[in-house]
Image 1 (cartoon, rainbow, N blue to C red):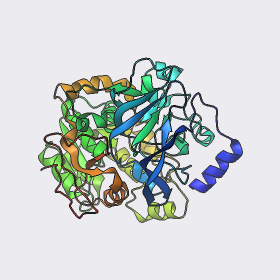
Image 2 (image 1 turned 120 degrees about the horizontal axis):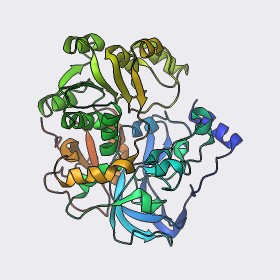
Image 3 (image 1 turned 45 degrees about the vertical axis):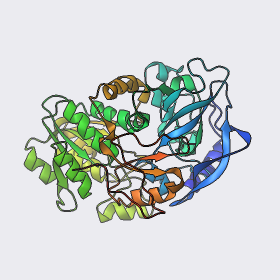
Image 4 (image 1 turned 30 degrees about the vertical axis):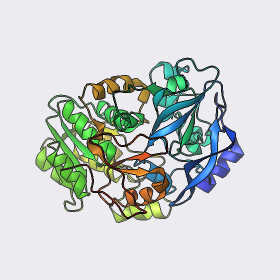
Amino acid sequence: MNTVVANTAEKVMGDRPTAVSTDHKIRPDQKMKALVWHGNRNVRVEEVPVPAVTDPTDVVCKVTGTTVCGSDLHLYHREIMQLQDGDILGHEWMGIVDEVGPEVKTLKKGDRVVASFQIACGECKFCKEGLSSMCDKTNSSTLQAKLYGKPFAGIFGYSHFAGGFAGGQAEYVRCPYADNCLLKVPDSLPDEKVLYLSDIVPTSYHAVQCAEVSEGKSVAIWGLGPIGLLASQWSKLAGARRVIGIDCVPERLAYVKEKLGCDVIDFSQQKDVVAALYEMEPDGVDCCIDAAAFRYTKGILHSVQRAVGMETDQSEIVNEALKAVRKFGTICLVADYAGFANQFNIGALMEKGVTLRGAGQAPVLRYWHDLLKKIEDGEFDPTMILSHRFKIDEFAELYDHFDKKEYGIMKTFVETRFSKPPAPGTPQLSSFKEGKILPSAVHV
């Protein structure tokens, strides 16, 4: 289903009721820079109105750090339903509280905070169970409810399929349910170390939990983007006997091999990934993690089916995992899948006794206090994959080069006019417009 059809369907059905305002008020005569979606591979940094407190539990933050995520590329390529011209993108951000709603209890102007990428009320059944990403009160998409039975929580800057909230690739963000969705961070940690608590740190940790990685097990990870790279590290910390990274980008393969001690498979050279995995693990891999997602097809069959609209997603990677996993092993899908895929090997799932688990959007609030402590204690350092730093003005160029996997870009820090200078040991500023792209700060 393309985004035009999806938006038409939503208009006919009407939005589902929520407990939060999707549209926000604005500050008169104040403008900010923000990355705005206008169509397939068409994003632009523009001057737009600054948001204002809209609901009583809101705050508005000045953004001091943001980034681009691999899942943002689905939006860039118009692969997520219900995108609308003018949407402000971005779900990973942090900043300083600038305006506080009258019912906010734990935050004040000037507090330094990181945002959860999901918007959760803190009061519904799922929030009380610690499943903030499945909040029942913040996603207005009736279409998603029809497709999935129930929708997941609203998400910053991730289309109207995820509630239609303005995102964090901007200089200001309005945050609903601020007491619940913002985490105060200590001054002892720089922005570069806490920004990624917004998404990739808890999401990668959640993937390893869902895959049941533990002492002595073998792990295979498809896709060595930021989630796959951090999941490799979490697997090592969990005591995995062997971690195997599967990708085709030389810098990423070299990093996990040389820095983390992982085995690697370059699928551009080794066409039969399953055979390569059985050479390493004759009984099959104990735990498999798909961190690659639906937009990457390898074979002609799924490439054609996706091109002509016969499927929205592809089953190639999950089928490789179903073949390669040990009998009664576990597979976790942490990569984004959104619709339907053909040729799914359901027979292998049943007959091998495999546990196939969709990780869902990671429930950030369940993990982020513990993960913040791991960062404070030096047990985990997310800046290990921080390769470059750019200004917000160059977001459109960053999307393009990140999509093309150029310049060794792994994970970026994007600064605004409110950001502090780079912290010691983190990348200095690069510029596409000035032709000054510093070498990746991730050294092999």
